[in-house]
Length: 305
Image (cartoon, rainbow, N blue to C red; front, side, top):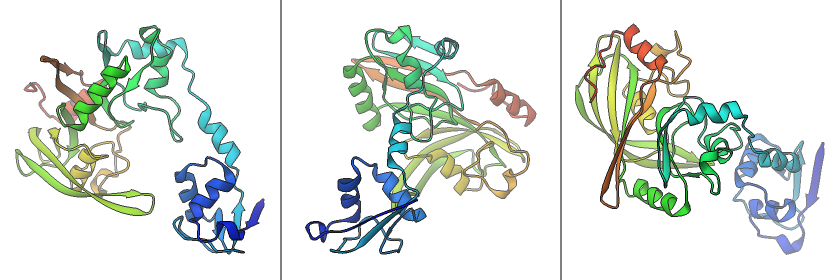
């Protein structure tokens, strides 16, 4: 189905994305970008960028584009069963007046979105633990990554913790099992990591302090303390030096294609921070699949501190 309209003189010299929002309502920028790239939206029968300025009498065509369906789908929230709520409550490490800390499972998102439905915020919103309030997400943890995760119970604590993360006053330690033998036992990775914001390339500085806990010719167990907090930072940095993480479907080298692990072997092991002169330290037990692979690869993890 094709819908089209002609640009009138009042919209001349307007950016295409702004015009589309005026015509179609509160449409997400990401959906506009995606539709332009795929050719679902064309200007004068051509693929163009969202930043292009339109002229009077230009023709805009929309191919099989149903914005209402997209909005309805996005508004649907995940409704967890009692069993799912209980299963995630059982993962809680600490529950105090201001926040909870849990050992997040691999495979569950922190927040809902267009690509993920099942998520921790919607689950705990239905938990008795948050009766009379609501859960606040204060930091990120990839869907595939397991380990320590914090959810605030009130706005004040959420703002405080978010600020601590932003100011790099929260110290995080990750563990990963990666392919091959790292050359050095410790050091720093300082990289320029590339990411895309729609079609725009962005280079970001990334710094991580690392230490090899154990290694052999086949695999390495690495402790990592990220100084910066870039998206997929640790996964990208290990991939960049040719030692991708077991189970990483996105950043993997040719050596990791065979025998792909179901789970990403990246675990948020420890988190440290201070609030009102009180120190907090939390550790999350390693998942069973993680310890199993350590044994299979004959990596010693008894000296973890």
